[in-house]
Length: 266
Length: 249
Image (cartoon, rainbow over all chains, first blue to last red):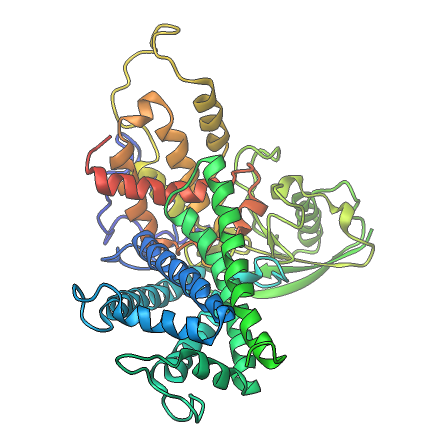
């Protein structure tokens, strides 16, 4: 039945003859081809998944801290601006002005390159291994898992916009009244209010936070698995933490544009 | 019960394949998917046509030989049930049923519904076995295995290697299969002695045919041996352990 290609041109096996004493010719029966889907990759997929898990956890911790910092907006304009100023001057004179911010920026950028790069390689390997007949009819099942690429791209776009809007204050993305921080004063509060008073910016923020929730909820749970958590209790805790953290970050951030648009913050 | 069967026909591994439509008029609800194929083949042979090639052996869910995709579901619409145990009770008179092979780039079609699953055999050959001289059976109670380890090893050893997990995965990953083998062998005294070496060998073999895991969880839905998703985490766990330990055990 099978048009078996025999041992000729057989790529070398990992551990020599597969089964000592076995009839190699018989083992070949029923084989259609000996070609693999790909040659042994230099960086295995499981290592790339660990890279994604670790960089993803860094992002998750960052957005958690970022969200808690954001909530200081409810403590008043002066306090919030002082916090923004403090972030720039913290640990002086051990660190230069904006020292901590730049450390964080470099770490995040390295994680971003690793995370996106690994995602691209894994995506293409997954497609190659699946082949031409795609898995269809999944419905709403594993919706978060299947939309990781989409939510990831939305988040990447949002990060670019967010930096242009509230960090660099680049025209087009930022509000017209944007004021950059000076050496002794930050205007984070005013910039934030001015930005969110534009309904389109607020709507994009809302969309990005929903994407963040979906991405984090699945990503953190996947990280638990990719970092090798097999214990029953550990997995249960990981599953719960992934969901709770994702939800907390989304809700904590979303109330800010809503408060601005409803006039609670101005 | 009358069923309209759309079945994948492919004469050679090179393809191309196509769907053929046939009607079986005397299907019964207690028939399995495989018995439906038997019935269809009787009909085809009576009419002088070539029967549909498909694999099956024990037909009691323990051998792992059977495995067809039914309406997009590896093994069939019922969760955690092999093709040989999937009954037609869920189908209504006149309904269409689509049968195709297990789909994955790692499983090339040999003919019709028969696929070449030697990519999984290669993983087993690479390290899914005990290759030390285990000697004769030890005296009773001289080698103690905790009850919990024995139970977990047995649960993971339940894998019958049917390949449905791979076909269910949108990434064509074999993590459920590999993870079950790694866990099973690492829990027991003889298998444990090659734990690190085995993980390296099996993972590097797996990389060449199968995709990465994105934790869709589709594999655990179809697995006829009820291997839990925990097995997937075991793949990375054993990978990390062997990487940092750099030893054979």
